[in-house]
Image (cartoon, rainbow, N blue to C red; front, side, top):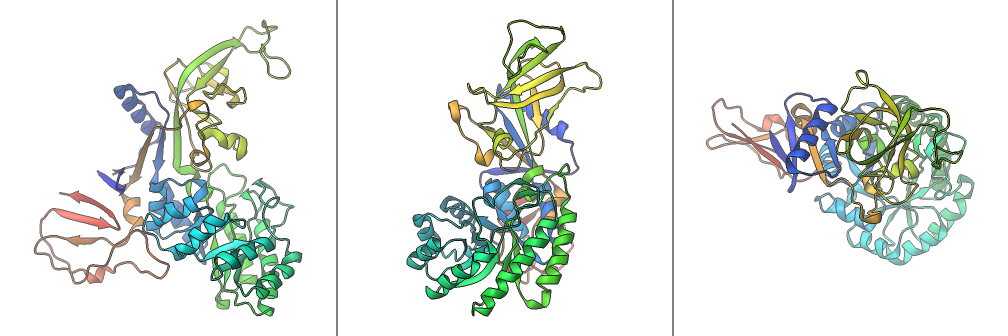
Length: 479
């Protein structure tokens, strides 16, 4: 069964689960039929739905504002919107993309402390009120261009915890410097209504959240004493999105819940939000790449700096250099910028075949374009395929077309039928002769105060008919 998550984005609804290798084989077979050798990606939207459900279960007090920069794929945004997620945008283009899905502006936080003036004007024009700041110049800019904005002071997180990507070197006001900024905001008559922090992308130690929440409480109290009406705490991002992360999401959630109960108890009526990115999407996407060339060299035919030597020295066992049609200037930029360690998978079983020391290189003419320097793989021929799992976060969204090399040309979206039905509101059934007490206005997503259609609104009728089922903007026909 197929449906559409957006107008031009079909989704395969699977009645039962298929393995990733099986799905990759299907896409490879389709590529062969079409005479296509371009890279492709497959996206499990059911994984996104299950991640959102788990977030709600483990962090019930924390409303997720998905970090659009992590992966701005429209299908992903639409599914998250229908699940109930809100959005963290950092630019005009990201705001435009979210608003294009008919999502209300009050479901967006403009979480960039240093905003381009024209982009700030765009936010003002489209009523995106909530935004972060961490410096005095930003306050004067907001005063001049959007004095009605709802401001959230971003503070510097603790720096003595392990993270995948450190953000404190660029953003965040040290808590001890919050007072002068608050005084400036007060003098300008601006509305500071919250405090935010970001412990760093890919946090490896849950304790970072405990310390940061405690610091946020101190700044929060300072602002309250000055007369600001403080109503929001934004605990940022940093949540793991894959099973091989050094810490689990449940471990982080446990620490956050304890810290919130201690420093921002539920009866304080403070709204708590977060900005998860990689948590929601990292494990949902797998990328397939085609082997466009290969070289066989002696395993020890490399010098101290990795350069090729003129002749082998001691070992006759070959090493294989594979060249594929996506690389670090494309989807695998995560290797350079996000410090990600990727893992190549083969459709061949390494248990049954001899493996060789191999390396995998991207398609560009730059020597830095190396995806994996060493990996044991079975022998592959030109024209065969590798695939890489856990490629949803900070990959295609940060890709370039250096050397005229494009990223994945084909995208295949799929979801278990059971997951698809869980993500969306109670279905409204309609057919000739079947009375409906109430038909709600169904649109993309819902506001924070919306409620799903109660099944009690629909009168039960038993008859046989073609049934059109609608979820939000999604529709398909069952016989």
